[in-house]
Amino acid sequence: MKKGDVIGGYRVISEPTNANGGKCIWAFAEKGGGQYFVKRFLEPKRPRDDAADSPSVRIRRQLAREFESRHRTIMERLRPDARGGGNLVLATDFFHEGSTYYKVTERIDTSSLEKPQTLEPRHKMVLLKTLGNSLKQLHDIDVVHGDLKPLNVLVQKRDGAAFHTAKLIDFDDSYVSGKPPEPDDIAGDSVYGAPEWRHYMQRDESVGPRHLTCAVDIFALGLMTHLYLTGELPHHDKRYGSPADAVNAGELLDLDLRLSDEMLGLLRGMTARAPGGRPRITTFLKALSDPKVCALQHRRPGTAKGRPPAGKPAPAGDGAKPSGSSAAGPRTSRIKAKNLTSASRPRTGTPAPEPPRTPAEADGPAAPAPSAPAAPSAPAATPPAAEAPVERASRVRINLGDRRRRPGSS
Image (cartoon, rainbow, N blue to C red; front, side, top):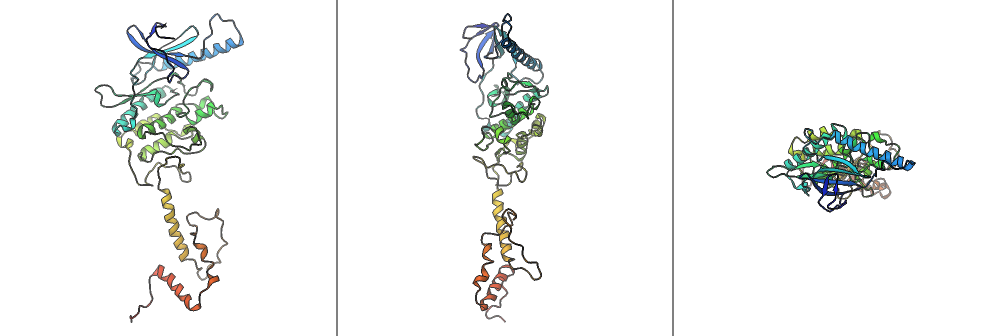
């Protein structure tokens, strides 16, 4: 394909390029006075009808049939004239010329807002709603986009419009829920890929095609929502190459605590490891009922909700925000250490103290302060008898008040 070529009735009017094309080459074209976007697939290659039969040809024919069937199935389900599909940029033509496949969509303005996080909360809410509604069009007919990422979402504002909207493009990697291509043929972006998608790509036997459902898109949408609201993806330990790899390792993604409590809870669910634990797209849309949900706030440490369950603290990660949980620990420790010091003498009639416990057996917050071991060693340096009552009076004075007779009092 080169500029000036006529392919399937479309005349190429720009130099073909592979920029952001993956396994494709694309160019702009025209036909009948209309402007189009033409994509040429580099693979698979369709064997000629008169090709001699052989095992390799039979395999190539089978791959070609599966490729054609998947694309035509998606085109039949996703109609350009479908109600509510105005923000879906769908294919208008799919054909092969010789051994090469081509797909055509209408040409649209490819400019996109670079920093959605700079929008006001109400504008962010409308943007996310249009993206969510576009995804709902797919999920309502059991279609997985399969490659949801910012590059495949155009954030635009029409002349005279009050709000930006999101146009969803590139359905070349879409598939029917539970029926993805083989791992060698499936596409996607590892940064936005879901945990089960990563396992499937790695041919983990515990994850089969049936596990790749619309929940794959929900995980990616959760990451993109965080990006659109804050300007960054959720942080994770740099040992892992992607958010999904971190989640598969049992880590919790580090969400920006400036997000509202409702949004924190929603995103925590959307980025859950188990597909069944993620909310449906309708839940995502219902959550966007108030612009305050999309507002950022600077809060005091420890006031954010939507935090991980007790016993599973989120990893600090690079650039983690303070959660306030560490501040509460030392205060509790000091109070309990004081109580332990003031009650260091056993009361009459109480059983003998138990042997010291190991650190693993002791309660963390209630453990004696570092100075506590000094108490047992006091008898070794016993002061004169006359001074002993003074020490006892000092301890009473600290806890119960000074009761000694003041000089000159009666």
